[in-house]
Amino acid sequence: MLTRRKLVVIGLMGMALLTGCQSPSDSQVEIKMISEEEQTEILNTYTFEDYRRVFDEAISESSQFDDQDDQLNKWIIRTLAQEKLYYETDLTKEEVVEVSNQAMEEDRVWKSIAENDYGVKVSDEEIDQFITEGPDKSDVPQHLAYAEALGFSLKELNHNYDRDLYEKNVLWMKLKPKLEKKYGVLSNNELIKKYEAEVANKVNQSQK
Image (cartoon, rainbow, N blue to C red; front, side):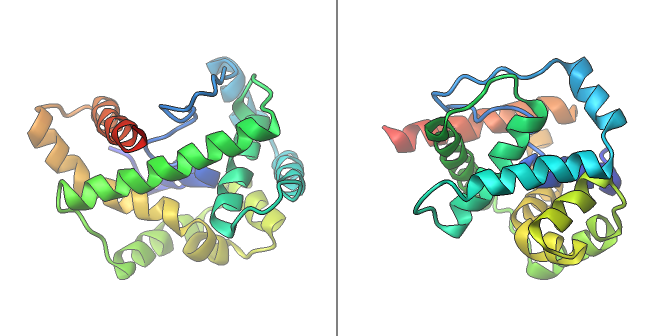
């Protein structure tokens, strides 16, 4: 079972519960990740200063993208940060926008399926409670550096800027039992794969 502590880490800067460090499922951009060993090395050795440098660079580079609305800009920052931390592939500006748009659309569809197909909804109060009991107590260097780089307090980051990620975490806790019943599977990873397949199918249909 995932603890709230682990969910905090998973939810950071766009690496939400069901996306992990994977590229968007139907993006035409092929992304090669660094090895699991390299990812683990980063998690084990990066300091606050290391993460702050990464996020400062991502935020600075995001300003070079013209005519982007605030929501897309948020996803661009997330994509750029993930690229710097976990991608072996160097993305062009056009690819960053494509990946970010795809991730934003998948996030919208993910939540839409949960509500429309499974009847799962969460209230603002439930989201706030989840954040208060977990992410607001975080001392994870990556989390703290991200907030500071954006000019937010930790609570501002969690309750406002990254609220969409934690909404997804709360939705998943309600959605998971329904998926267990539907698929006859208890493994969290297997349920993630099956639900991601549902999302990818719906995204593909909408793009035809």
